[in-house]
Length: 623
Image 1 (tube, rainbow, N blue to C red):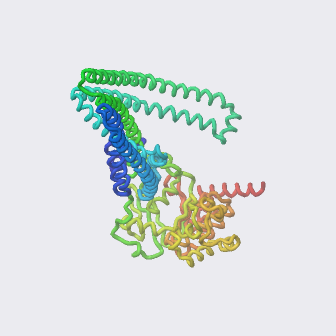
Image 2: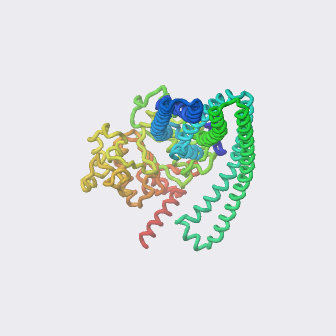
Image 3: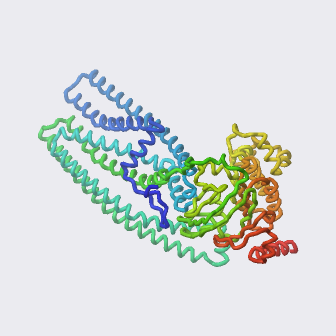
């Protein structure tokens, strides 16, 4: 992938794009998805430049009519027509700006959808990557901040700077008709003011890291003080004064950074004011001299006076728009970095899974794997660079039921990710019926597995959609009801009058149905049965259930996994004793394997853990 999208052991820093590159990026986006934003923006720029220009010509026209003693009818007609023209231009400008606002806001919401879809298209390693999660949320924040979002500010900033540059050029043309040297001097002073403001922006940006660090510390302390769950500890351990002291230290650090910024900002503001005041005073003096000498008449004086006054305002407008664009560009870097991640290749492969005979035989042959980037919320890789598997060899025979057991961090979840194709091994092979699984397209490979993971994925959609994981119109109702019956949910559905179109949870519908933990697990069993894939994978889905409920769920899975290859993972060893073979992992290595009885007779680590758990539950029952 591109250099800016690489994940390393260091914190991810997105590639920095220029403001012009970001403007072109969004122009291409709007050209593809909503060209009206571009048309309305262009029209708004032209109209916004015309309005102030007519504003400085109207007084000149009025004075000229008076000085040449025009007839009242002629004067009124000209002024009315000119005023109506201004009103029409202003009205059209307002309508165009409103239309543009509505269209690009709609596109901002659509872009959020594209960002979400991108998350589903990229390789799983980026989805789980701690760095990429941070980039995703920063990209999401750049779109979800309303009018302060990157896309919105890019539009308003681009339009703003375009209007001010166009007005600057038009006013320069007007001033140039008075005196070319005056125009050159004003432009030179304008660029000096621009350079001064640019230095101020650069200085403020140089303090960004200091601001970010002090703000991070401040909110960390503030969250600790406001944390409801921590209120008991704060009281019991007398932490109040310590936290207040930390808060005061951080506030002082913030004050010092703000003080540095204020001093520098004050210097630049004063210098800019003196430069602008000197420029305007000199221009007005020259203009007054020309009027007294008779070089320009009263109408011309008013016209040029207005042009010179507006001239400095447009320079300020250019600087403000540039600052807005620079701020938006920093957020856009994260958005573009995430959107430019490569999509997962799901179609490449010379073989097809339809050629495979069932049940499947799966073999890990000399597999080594190391996480290159620390993934969050994963027990098997607390840090990047950790070697999870080193030349691992495991064979799951066709139709065999394997239980994978071990303590946290043993590598069980990583094994499932490798098995299902979420990750590729660093070396070695994963074979399906003796064929390297890389020869099959990913989209077909995923179809081989009915997996139930630790996280219970329940959408606020209908029961039918949650069971089939498909749109309502594609549901095979007969097959869905068969899966519901086999999962032991038929009685519940009849009791609560639930059908395939009944909504789950109250996330969308107030009358949605919530299920208990055990009922949710049976729903996931129904989902796995509906898919009816050749390989059944259970990655500790019942960890939150009590031992009795877990045993019932596993017995159901065992009952309906006949004729399939199955992998069961559980912390509670008694739940998987029905397996054909139990493999115990420790730090990514197989330390024991065999049937439950074999391992108990071995009297090794498995037997030790089994006795500890058994004694725990027996003691719990006695109490």
